Amino acid sequence: MPGYDLKEAAEIVRAGASLFARGLATGTSGNVSRRLAAGQVLISPTNVSLGSLAADGLALIDAEGNHLAGAAPSKEWPLHLAMYRARPAAAAIVHLHATHSAAVSCMDGLDPQDCLPPLTAYQVMKFGRLPMTGWYRPGDPGLAPEIEALARAHPAILLANHGPLVAGTDMQDALARIEELEETAHLFLMLRGSRTRELTRSQITELEDHFGSANRAEESR
Ligand SMILES: O=C(O)[C@@H](O)C(=O)COP(=O)(O)O
Ligand SMILES: [Zn+2]
Image (cartoon, rainbow, N blue to C red; front, top):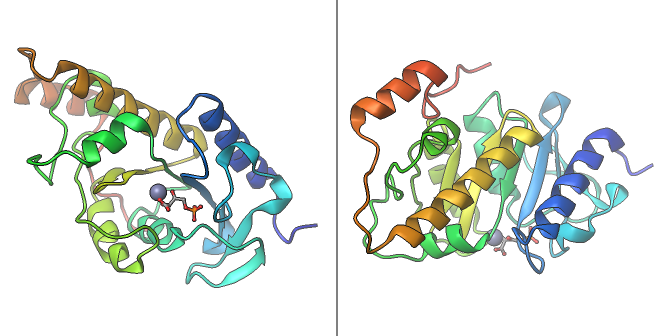
């Protein structure tokens, strides 16, 4: 026994395999975590391909980041914990270097508070406004306070010159959100140089009234 529940571990393994199979995660980039009871977090190990995770080869940490069981955790555990602290309803977090989102994270001159224009209804429904952090090297715990502040009202955040970090109420929710972000980044890049009809403020308000705002801060537990 690895010292944690294999049910949640299997969710992480399935998510990693699915992302890798579809080219959304390459090499050893990206990390996936799942919050467990008592604030413990099961997270993918550092420096292992998301395509070859094993349920008994993950890492278990507590809410302070202490290593409790399994392999050495992803170096991004401080960002995952910061996002869980800010979003009490979050139960899963995914970070990727997916190509189009990573490309947007390298573009100059974007609004750091909202770096993609409102293009489609599903974008508004799944993640809404997308803020971008300042530059930090991968694994720098100094980014955690910025993530914690942004994540209160944003389920998806773009790390500068790096890639997206996204939370969901469960693994399917986190995957759907990060995949929508990647598709929106792709559309944004495709449409550059074309006259584009962005969603208007009143169209966004109609979507938020109907489906709820993706940028509403969660109640604390
Ligand atoms: O970009 C990085 O180095 C990390 O953010 C990453 O994607 C993979 O790191 P580990 O999860 O530590 O393997
Ligand atoms: Zn990364």
